[in-house]
Length: 181
View 1 (cartoon, rainbow, N blue to C red):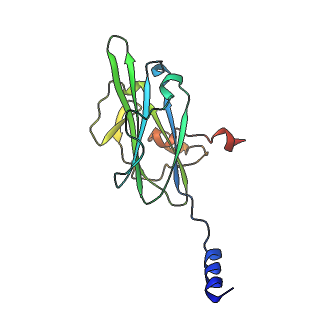
View 2 (cartoon, one colour):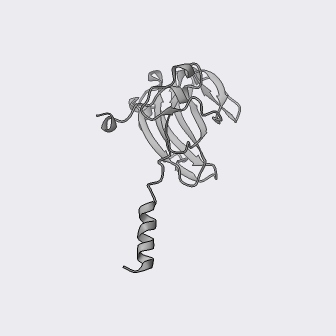
View 3 (cartoon, rainbow, N blue to C red):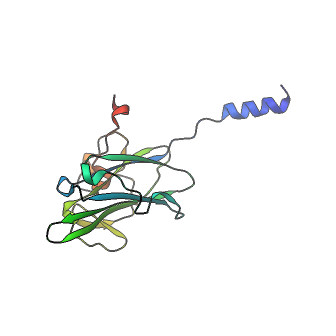
């Protein structure tokens, strides 16, 4: 092997695997909102505005018709932050179709896998929030998460001291069955 070949081999061996940095998102819907006419979709984009998934009416998830939790991981690439929105259209008797959503805008956390839960909530049906806020547990809160103190590591129980804080971070997102076994 040439001197350049050995140098390249040593360089490759000295490089470890990059730290895995991702958000693990669980999508949920209140049981009262589950019906054959309920549709749900996800839209996610990074801080440069590039679409990561969804963001059109053709990309739907089955959440609204069966009520089962769905999950998805977002791995950090070139972006520092990601904004994710869970949207739904529910049919309310006597009212018709009502749009409902919950969003989160948060940073990737270097070397960590953080659990996040977005939930379409019955308590938010009649709540209209300003553009930079989203409805969580019936109240408007900022979409952007700036404090990492209550981030929950993937598969761990949320910090009980954060229980009254933002449920998008503290509702918990269990590991998928294949990881838990």
